[in-house]
Structures are given as structure tokens and as C-alpha cells.
Length: 374
Image 1 (cartoon, rainbow, N blue to C red):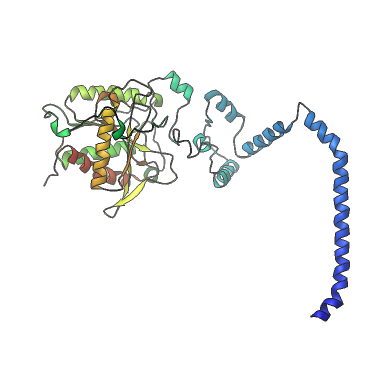
Image 2: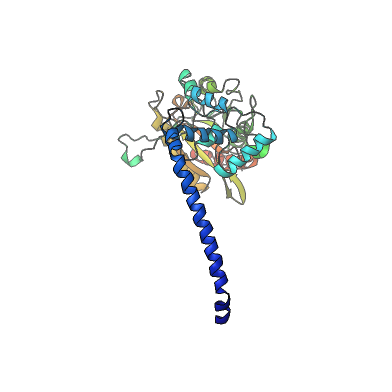
């Protein structure tokens, strides 16, 4: 081996010298051209037309255009203060670009909410309205606008005691009122889409199933409206459902509970758990506040939501995702036990949502002191 090295090493040394010489020539050549290019670069840097910021913006613009964000998108951003991009029929190339953008950057050029990411909790990825539209419709309530940090009960100055057992007997009308503010919301795993505009879709079916369970299995009286509130003007959804709820309350003056059934959105996967060996959607309660509109008794609604979530945890751990206090009031000012239910999200199946609402029916029946029929 030693003999081999001393015999052939001069060849390697000669080759190394050649490579080193070539590298040195290349280095000197590059340095030479860079030296004579300095005045040109200095001129470019000093130019008021093209500077480093312009180059950066230009590159960013080209990347966005490659991802399908064009001039119309910029106009929409300026006019609506959000990257609101109208989804249009995609060509094969556009679909490919969108797929690449989602794979590498987790954004969808046709979905403005994907630009925000999960860090912006008050927006998340729900059906969000433009702020300009919200200002022009002050009664518009979007459950995705702002989440308010809740105050622990042990730190509150004023406590609300809500004992359902002390309620006066319901002599006229129904004990429970059920509505859907966003009737079009549905379950993509079942219907192939997240919304069916102008229809009583998935969440309406869940509401109907809850009504049937409460009546047939627990003997409770229920009034439910299937009136469509979110079409043709989505921004008037809560105004419309508020009028419906006022009429229902007038017809059922002793109603003990009001439930507005929705489903969540903006998650990467369905909200699902397994209870009694069955896949079940998870449920979150939304509580309104007085942050935007007058609602002096909102803490009473929160107290009831707390009772509901505690009972859910007691009977079926994993079913509840807790309750969330937000800036809208969601017509909850009309009744101290009005709550908004989000049954799963748009990626769940209708069967999972139906299974969840069956368990919720038992929870509600026990809170109201009703017993399952034998």
C-alpha cells in the first residue's frame, strides 16, 4: 500500500495543481468582473426608480402571480381590508398552482382565510365578512370576529345562580326553542360541500333530530323553526333569526332554553371522538357578550353554558369542547338561557353530528329534570 502511494502520488499532486490553478483563474476572473460592475450596481442602488425595496416587491409580486393572486386580488385587498379573493372556476394550470401553494405554504389562493393561519384566533377560518360590510350592518353578528378571554368565576364580583329546578311550570307553549341562524351550513363528508345556499341543510337536519329526541325519548315540549335566515343576504342572518326568535318566545312565554344550532369551520380535520364505540362529532358552545351590542345579562347565558358543558363532561367525557365567550351577542339577549351550539365542523359527517346531538339531548334532558321514557 505504501509502495502504491509513493508510486502514484505525483500524478495526484500534478492534478491537484491543475485544479488549484483553474480555481484561482476563475476566482480572479469573477473578482475582475465584479470590480468593473461596481459602478453599475452603485447606480442601480442610488436610482430612485429601482431600489432594493422595489426589487423585493417585484419578486413578491411575481411569486404571488405564480400562486394565482393577480391584480384583481390586490384591488379586493385594498377595498375590503382583507385578502378577499373570489373563487372562480380553475383551469388545470391554476388548479396545479393552487395545489403546489397548499402543499408547500399551506395556503389556498382562492381562500383568503388561509393567508392568516391558525395564529389569528379571532378570525380563524370561518365565513368572515369584510369590516366595511360589518360597519354598514351594525347588527351583523359573525361568531368569528373576536374571541374574548373569559373571566374565572372565582374572580367575579357578581355571581349568577341559575337553578333550573326552580323554574315555574310550563303551562303554555314549549319548554325548548330550537332555531338555525345559518341554515345553509352542512357537512362536507356527507354532502360534498360545506354550504348549500338557500336550503335547510345539515345543521337543520341536526336540529330536527334534536327536536325528535327531546319529544319522543324524554317527553319534552319543543318549538322549532325551519325558516331560512341566511339567504339571500348572509349579513342579515342574525337580524332575521332574531325576529323569528321573538315570535317563538311570544308564542312560548315559558320556554326554559333556546338553542341555535351551527357547525364550526376552518379546521384541518373533523372534530370527532369515540363514545360508546361510535364516532361522534364534538360540540362547542358559543356565548355572546356586550362587547359590541347591548347585552346586560350575558353572564347569565354564560352560567347556563357552564352548566351544560359540566354536565357533558360528567356524562360523556370528550363530547364537549367547552364554551367560548365572543364579542357578538347572537340574539342571546332575548333569553337568559339562549346558547349557540357548534356541532362538529364542516369536515364531519352528518352521522357523526347526529350521534353527538343524541348524546346532547340526554345532557339537556337531565339538566331540565326530564327522564327517558321506558
